Length: 297
Image (cartoon, rainbow, N blue to C red):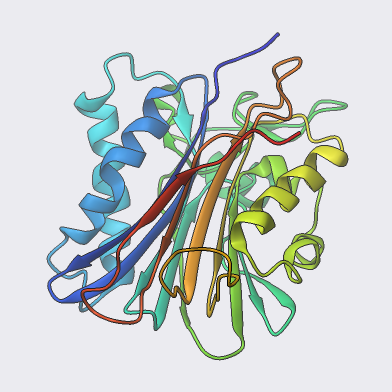
């Protein structure tokens, strides 16, 4: 049976208090579109509005994740049904990359051709002790993955009200300095990672200079490997140079988001969404060039 697309992506460049920020995220929802949609609309604002964001971004992110989840639980989502993963990446002044996540959506950095996972997969088996200490349990039935209380296939998430006593929204946070060896970043939902390792994903796109084509190639490869889940990915290439025939400003960094609903019969090759490209090196020149991509065939 088909289901609505529950993956949401976010890619934006903006100036805040004289600083330049690249904001990127993948939210993989389950049982509802409400939670990932709310995260896309509010999570980054909540992070940036934390008073200590510029002095201690790690702590600001933790506070904002907690506040956002509390808001979802208390009033934002009327039905309070379902939940979502989150993997967020904030690029500060083209120098510092701060990645945070809950759930199993993943961030992988390519440094000099080598994959480096920046996020943590929050799997029930890995956090069984904590779950059981909170009064929950982890099941593992034949042919299925481990689940919290026989239901949720991850140990941390936003939402999931009925499981909240046993499931945390506390993120893991990682800080990376961007240098000459930093090539690109992949953010993707588990529709990619169920069928590809980190290094396989990096190898799949490392020779594709244009991040738009890289994201297409990654998703096509995941489908080729029989991924049967919704797929979302963002590719952020550092030091990107567009081909001569592309009439856009010079942009050392570019990002692309593509979404698939591979569960709908006959629609597994429909690529949708928007490409955002920007120059993140010169203050005041971070203009977005936006284009709509044609369906893949």
